[in-house]
Each structure stands twice: as C-alpha cells, then as structure tokens.
Image: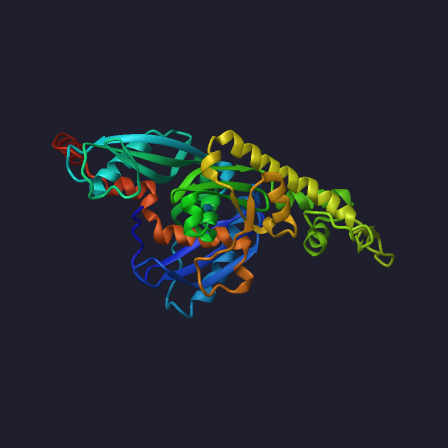
Length: 422
C-alpha cells in the first residue's frame, strides 16, 4: 500500500496514556521516507487512569502535564523556542470496535487515481458512523479490479469497478471525550488517535510478519490489546480488560502484602512458569500494615509463582478465545509478538507458546534508532508506534480521507459544488 510520509523536518509528538504509566516521545522527521529521530522523552507512573479509562480528570491532567513537560525539557536544546502544541494519542482497545467492509466504486474504464481510492474509503466510512462512536482508523487491506483480487496497489491500473476490503476501527465517544478533556486542559491539541494494539504492532513488527500474518498481544497495566496483521495492515483488533496490575493485586491479596511490595516482588522474583528450585528459594514478604519489620517473613518462591501463573494463563486463554471467535484464525498466522510492560515477565514466552500453540517472541521498538535503553523495551512499543503511525500512515486517518476526496463523476461534482457553495 502506498503511504505518503510526513515532510522532512516536521516535529511529531506521541502521548501514551496508560493504566500504569504515561509516556511522551517528541521526534523530528529526518528524511523523505518518514524516518525520524527522538529528541525528547518523558514518562512517569500513571495517575487517574484505571483499566484504560480516565477515573480522575485532575490527577490524569497533572500526570500528563508533568510527562509532556519532561519530554519538552529534553527536546528544548535541539529545538529553539518550541512549545509542544499537538500530540497523537493512543486509544485503549477496551474503547474500540473493529469492523470489516467490502466497498465498490465505478471507475468507468479509466485508470485508478488517488481520488478513486479515497472515494471508496470515504464510502466505507459512511457505514461506520454513529452517534455513540467516532471513527479512528480507515485501513485498506486489499483491492479488487473487475474481479481480479489480491491487488496491493491499484493506482494506475485500468478497469470498470474497484472494490476494496477495508478495516474500520471506531471508538466510544464518551471515553474519547474524557481522554481529550485531560489533554486539552494540559493546553495540547490532539492531532490524531491510534488504537494501542495497532501502534504496538507498527513499532515492533518486521515487514514479513505484517504481510504473512501475525498477532500482536500488547499487555499493559490494566488492558491487554490484541491486533491481527495481514497483507501489510491490521485486519482485526480487540482487547480484554485484564493486565499486569491484576497480577500485582493477586500477589498483594495472596501474600497479604501492600500493592507496592507486591509489585516489587513480582519484578524481582516473579515468573510465568514454575522451576524445580522455587520450593527451596525463600523470599522475604513484608506484611501489610506492620511497621516493625525486624522479624523477616519468609515464603517459598513457589508460592509467588503459583499466584502469578494462573492469572497469566487466564489472560492468554481469554486472548485465545477472542481470536477463535473472531474468524480471522487463518490470517492471524502462527506467530505471536508480545509487547507492553506486563509482557516482560520471565517465562511468559514459554507459557504463551503452550497456551496459544503458536511461535511467540517478545517485541520492542525496532523502527527507531538511538532510543535510550530505559525506553527501548516492550513497555514503550505503543509510544514508539504512535510516532510511526503519524509519520508514515497519516493517510489512514478518517478526517484526512474526507478532506482530500473529490466527487467522482460530473453529477457528483455538481452536487458537491452546490452543497459547498449554497
């Protein structure tokens, strides 16, 4: 598919508002191919967001403001007099819906132009408009001209009828408004929206994986997003409202320790699969509410792993059920890429292969050079992918398609002119 990259020298910024962290990357486009360099990075623990939804506007606004400010400070040396104005923002999968349509338009024996493609996409967008939802993505997957299918690039080809298979992603207006309010109160405008799983895939997949079919599982703090890629684009997206935070809560309850101590134990000693040494290895579990920690409270590591493993198995089984019900099984291929902060649990890859019966690898941002190690792991795949989306795929933004489309035949042009001028 032909994508038009943003102009060289453009400044782009991504804001990833998650349940466990908020991150901001500021970058500059360095060439005509859409490649970019990251100039500033800011991230901190999330506030006011739970399971992908804003639950406290003031807390979320404050966390967003601090994160963006940190990224701006880092970028300030490289860009003089630069206050950030626009950001591209992620939309958690729990607030989106996936729709697939096949649309056709007449091209009357002429060669297919950019405008013909846009007309087909604009027609598809009309099918997904409703009062409760807003269109986020219009992703063309494959084209057919006069019955010849599987065409990736139809422009310049001749025919009478152009068909396009389109994947549309819509978002709940109420949830989007809450996110938008926090961002606008931080004196920023939203340049575009991008579904979290799609962004994670754009950051971490190689071209062959996108073409041949694979599934991205983006495991965040409160939401696990699923995105299936095939033929170079996303053909299905979904999510489950469970993530790394739920694992931490299980540990806190199971070992009667605080949430912060449970998180520390999870990071230091956690594993998704049991090993033979777990029974003999003792870990110190601080008891909740006890100030005096002079007497250590030892528990076998097997107890911790025994709490973590069932929850991660449940997440993977829920993902498997979603994929089975979606009908995209054959296109999803046998390859799974895990991203997100919660995907870094030791042993999760092996557990994923066992539960999903697919090849599993850990994904990280591979399309950005020069990212510091601290922000170059699976936890920052979505943030990095937002930059890739705005840099390379802005032609999939619904507003862009509607703004650029011209009516096809003379009668449509007359109707369009009358509507615009009267």
